[in-house]
Length: 92
Image (tube, rainbow, N blue to C red; front, side, top):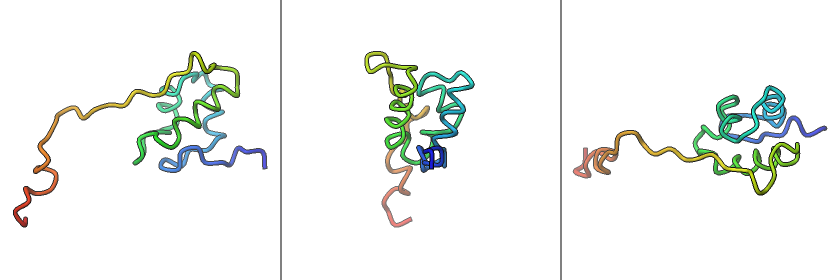
């Protein structure tokens, strides 16, 4: 096995081969790889795969430890009250 079947992002089922293909197509940042492959868009929001993608970028010589940046988290567009999420807490 050459490592291309290894899942980098389990949430979105993105493999190492998918990440390497995105790099070959010109994606040279974590954010651009995220947009191209959906890695980091799953339930964990990149907490598991973000560092793996950074390591791949460094191992390919595209980024260095001094220049690499992780993806920036996005906050909800419209804040909502906690009660709106849980039904208000009155047995509904």
